[in-house]
Image (cartoon, rainbow, N blue to C red; front, side, top):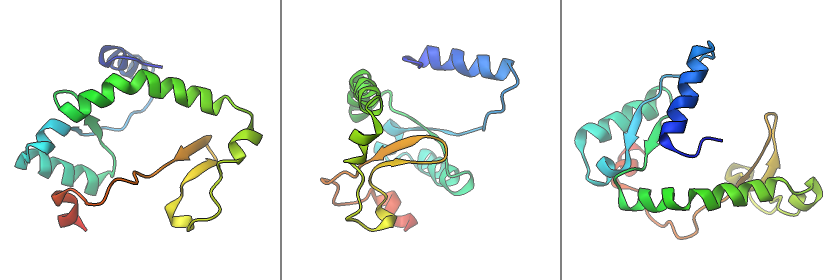
Length: 132
C-alpha cells in the first residue's frame, strides 16, 4: 500500500510502464474549493459530470491536512476490521434501512466494503446545492 504522495506517483509510473491502463482523472484541490475558486469549482463540475471520478488533493487545506495526518490509523483500523472472520462482519450488515442508503458491511463482486454516513452533516456545500 502506498503511504506517501511520492510512493503513489512511483506506483502509478510502475503501472504505466507495465502497460496497465489507467483512467485520466482530474485532480481537484480541496483548498481551492474551500476558497470558492471559480476555476476549481468548474473543474469539479466537469469531472463530476464527465467521468464521475476525480482525485481530491487534500494538501494545503486545514481539514485535508487533518485527514492526511489520521490516514495511518484509518488504514490500520480498516485492515484490522477486514481481517476479521466473515461471521464477525455479518453483525454489521444493515437490514433495517432502505437499500438506497447502502450502509454497513457487505460483500460485493470485487470484494467487501463497510460504508457509513456522517450523522453530523446537515447541509450541503453551496456548489453541490447548485448541482442538485
